[in-house]
Image (tube, rainbow, N blue to C red; front, side):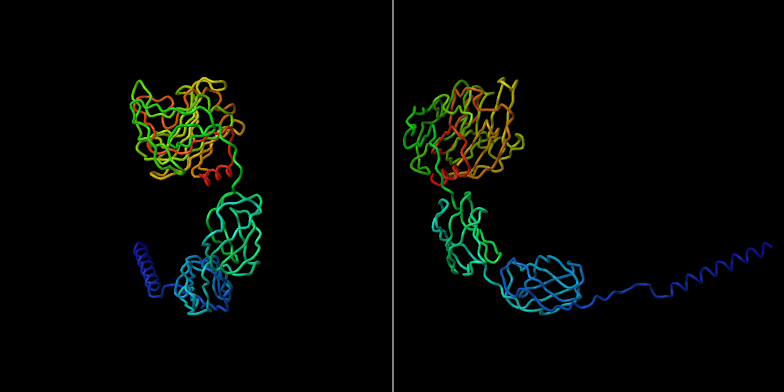
Length: 434
């Protein structure tokens, strides 16, 4: 019996090995799929601008867009919009060359599926004016506009305008109602072109206080002149500004026991529920925490615009910062600071317009750079710049600085205070007129 069991096990092992060997001798069960060659029939349209889409019609394209390559005069398209078995949509590359269109699907190449003519894109060269009001006629000069009014549209910062006439090098349009200051755009047969900025010039209310710094600190509005507190700083001087002269301040760190290098305005001149402060600055960028202006009653009750805070401060980096602070005032017990870190930094060694608005009715604080909004801060209920006295109304220095806290270094021109919140168009008008 034992002999039989041993023999049976031996037979089982032999049969198993035979089966394995037999399977090894067979070829691997691998399927090789042969993709059919694409059969393009046409392309449409046969001409157009770089960046436009064309459609290749036909069959056997498959549906896998990553397997498709299209070449325009030998230049490969970087975007295949879509691919179905009968249609491929592709964007004409920016550097496309007129000539044959070549199609590749997987390894199959069709040398020419048709010809495509690249039309030079339209160009806006100049405007007859870069500012105006609704109803004005504006001439847009350039190339590649064509003369078909149905294929041309013009926008003023997104607001559509009426097109009066068109030739290939000139468009005549009517400035539309309701537009805002911004770029002119022209669309030719669906191809967009961005041109220069066009300003909506509107009446701007008079400021309550204005310093032009034309060799003096006189208020252009007829009020009390500002005064210069030199302290341990340098004497005041004047340089060429954006319009006439500007005041120049070398920058000086506060010394303990005194105020240095400060242009002091009349007390309370900036105390308004609705407030706008604008000026032009040419900043040297010498130190962190240099104030453009600082108005307030105490160190804990103040309103200021700062060129740059230290990099570690609240993640501000090098961006502009505006601040309003309340300490032990109605609705605000203890110390409460509200900081607006703008989205941009102030460029160095060149003239730029800054504006800051604070609205008690809208509960907002905003900062503008060259008439472009770069930050908005929502304020809590009850927040207004009139909760504290504006005993120190200082330009270029901290209203309540401590030892070694820096003052502004650079040029300042056309400093204005308004007892209202100016609109975007009003700020752009100030920026445009300088």
